[in-house]
Amino acid sequence: MDPILVCAATAVEEGGKGVRFAVATEGSAGTGFVVRYDGAPYAYLNRCAHMPIELDWAEGEFFESGGLYLMCATHGAIYAPDTGVCAGGPCRGGRLRPIAVVERDQQIFWQPDDYVRPPSD
Ligand code: FES
Image (cartoon, rainbow, N blue to C red):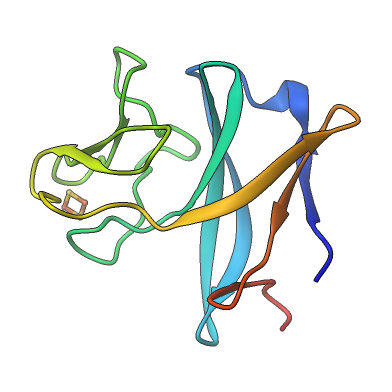
């Protein structure tokens, strides 16, 4: 399946707001998100590893205030932005579900896989 456009590369700033995009998993609507960390884009399914709810309480706010970790706004689970592995809080032992992303021609695309599909699939 072809990669799907998320947004312009400039829309995702280092340690700043993330950009959400619509996905479907096992037929249910969901969201993915992309953030930038250490210069590179990283995308994950927007679902805490501890409970199946979205991480961003305020839309697009995925980083904690220090800009080092992604944080679930509800109960404070923190995740390494480059691996999605839980780094503290109630997600212990869990990790975010990664979504492949590519940055090319000043745009960011996500790559559907067997589990994370386009919403119309
Ligand atoms: S739902 Fe994410 S930390 Fe509780």
